[in-house]
Every structure is written in C-alpha cells, then in structure tokens.
Length: 517
Image (tube, rainbow, N blue to C red; front, side, top):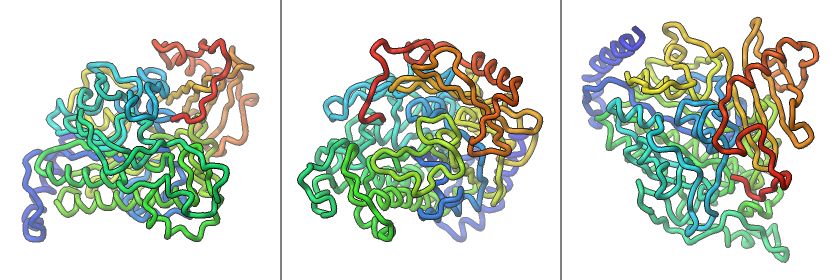
C-alpha cells in the first residue's frame, strides 16, 4: 500500500509539474520510470557535531544546514561500525557488525602505488545495495572511496553491482587527497600529481612557522574536486533513467589537505602546527574546517544540479558519515566539539564513535524541517532503498525499511535492539547494544582487554537522561545488564577471521600501528 502511495504521488507530481518545468527549464527531461533516484552521500570521519545542523559553531556548512531545514534530521541514526571498512561493509550488505563478513580494517599491501592491494574483498555473489538496485533496473554508480576490495580482486565495485566506478579502491590511498591516480572502473586513472607518501614528519631542523617548510607536501590536482565533477557529470548523463549514486567522499579523513585558498576563511583560528605522522600542516584547525566546508559547497552543487535538471522532486538524497571523528593528522576534536554532546570518538563504541549526523532530503515527500528519533543504522539502508525501488531482496538482512519514517506514512517497524562489535588491531574487543525499555533509551558497552579477557564487566547508560554516557547504572539495574549480556551473546555469529572473535588474543601481546587506516 505504501509503495502505491509513493508511486501515485510521483505520477501526480510529475504530470502536474511537467508543463511548468518545460516552460521554465529546458534542461528538464521526460522519463517514464517514476521510482526515485537515490543519492547516498557519505563523509569520512565526520563527527555528530561537525555540521551546523547538528550544533557545530565554528565550521561553515550552509548547504548541509539548508538540506536539513528542507528535509529531515535523523538524530538516532548509527554507522555500521566505528572504523571505515566494517562500517562500509555493513552499509553495503545490510548486515550488522556481528554478522557481516568484514568486521575490521583488514589491510593488504602498503601505501606505495606499486603495492596497492586494498583491503579484504567482499566475497563473490555478495548481496549489496548495488546488486539489488541494479537487478531492479537502476543504473548504479560509486564515485569516491571504496575499501572493500583492491585492484583485480573479486571485491571491486564493478564486481559488486556497480555499473560504474570512479574513485579510490584502496582506503590507504585515500589518506592522500592528492594521489597520483584514482580508478575508473578497473582501470588506473592518472591525476596530475607526483607521488606523495601520506605519512611523513617535518625534519627537525626546519622552521615549523615558515610556510615554505610545508611546500614539499603540496600538490595541485585535488581528488575531491574530481569526485564532485564526476558526480555532476553522472547525474546529467543519467537524468532520464532511475539511478542509484553512492557518492563516498574521503573528507575530512586525514591527511588534512585542501587547496590553500580555502584556508583564508578560517585564518582567525589560533593554530599549533602539526609536524607529522600524517602529512604535516601549518594550520591543522583551518585545514580540517576548510575540508568540511569544501565538501559542503560541493554538496550544494549536487543539489543545484538536481534542481537545474528537474530531478529534485524525484530524488532521495541521504547524507551521513561512516563513523565518528578521528584525531589523526592534527585534527582537534575538542576545539570543534566534533562529537557534540556525545562521549567518544572513532574506534569507540560509545555514542561519539557510532552515532552519525544524518539528513534525508526529498522535496514533496519528506517534510521540511522535520526530525526523526527512529532508532536506525546503516544496515537499514538496503531494505529502505529496495522498497523504494520496488525490488525483491533475495537474502535476509538485519535491516528494517525506514520509508514509513521518511514519508510519515504507515507504520514504522522498530528494532528490538541494535548491536555492534569492534576488534581493535592494537589488542582488545568491544561490544555495544542499544535497546529501549519502559520508555527509556538504554545503551550497554563491554570492553574485552588483556586484563579482562573473560567475562568483562558491562557498562549501562540511560541515554534518555544521560546522552553523554557519564553515569554507569549497571549496579542499579542488574536485570537490564543481564538482558544486555544475553543480547550481546546471541546477536553475533562466529567470524572466519580469528582476530575478529572474542576468544582471540595474539600471543605477542597488543600490537602497535603507527598509522591505522
């Protein structure tokens, strides 16, 4: 019934607007497939509080703020995990991090061009958002960062349902926003940059306050500009077809890099130069803010293109982030209050590591200036998109369609609980559960460490009163702790990768990585 409602509104709106559109905009094209286009825009390491619509005060994000005013803020939407690859795997497959194949950053190769081997690839014949949308008759494209299968593997986007791919295959390559190349489908696409290793430190004898000391680390061909231009081209080229576009930016993930002219708008920040680890930068605060503002402006270009082509009223745009903010590359999370009122950052399963700023925009269908507290996560996107595409799901997912929440129509099914797990390369495992009971929003977190390998204690927080997870209520509510433990133990399946199981502990002790992805 809900789909018939959507289709009816589409037809009426399209027929009613057709004459006016032809009179006012010659770029508008006729089409007879009234299912919506879907554009999913994903930022990389953007915190819950990093944009104005979610409370940011220092970084300018006018386009995203307008998108939120014209659409819906999802205030309880969660990433698939707290780092890149497993979060994206969850998004793509509709599986949470206790069921999905890829549960951590499993790196292959190095940061060198000649050793670009990517990450653990998705298996052949994996059901992804792209395969479901393609089989439903949509054109499918990924523009941006992938991280679920390197060159010549069976995990490349073209082998996982995307008709077209342009961007980074290896997420290690995305540590550099001025790389020597991107990939176009399965082919190397050269950029006008010489090789720059993304992890370097300023020599000890240089003046850290002299701009010339940083010249060595600059290039000209900004990959993020390439991604946006390619997305604009793709939308124009496919304006007469139903399409699914996954626009996966690498901003604001370190290294902190942006064209110099973008820094001026934040010249008032007091700065402490970042000497390296990731690439050195004289003005790291301005650089991170400018990266986010650059992305914001480009998202405005995407929206303007939809409006110019008359596609805005039959295109659902969702904006989100792959996990919470990270401090790598000199990023100053405290200065920007990047996690807002939340506790924790990237690699945490506290709210700041997994609750992400999310906006849904669909003029005429999603109410302007609306807000949803529906409890949702990345694994809900696949069934949501499938319902809008009128597609059949050949396999079960962990997700629930959010279409009723978006349209404020029908009955929205609810999750009994949401579950996450994270396996840290440095040693240790983590679990988290979100569940509601007695009209209260409960969150449980458990850390397995070298000191507490077996039966670690469970922390319990009432997010209804304590969104910052400051007061552990575990001793006061033992029955809820017992419920959380049952859910944690029953929600996962065993991984084929030993280090992604809770009984795995490396004999050599905790491992240290200088530059984790």
